[in-house]
Length: 85
Image (cartoon, rainbow, N blue to C red; front, top):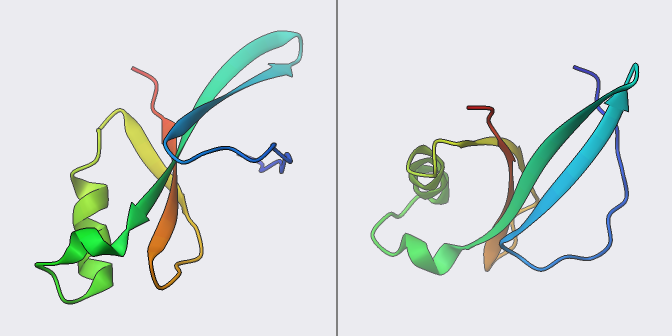
């Protein structure tokens, strides 16, 4: 599927984004969720990659990870797309 970049206004963490697209006259709706994951929740895991893997594996199965943002010393931003039922 082709990618299209759309500038969004600044949103807070843990908010959902709904995008409606018209393709050949048919409307399709896509839902996205942005989560800011604090590294402080990785206390029992030494490796941040292992901790992030656990977060993703245990995330709501109705949402698919589509992008991992740039990690900072304090957190990392994750973007999920809602999977069709």
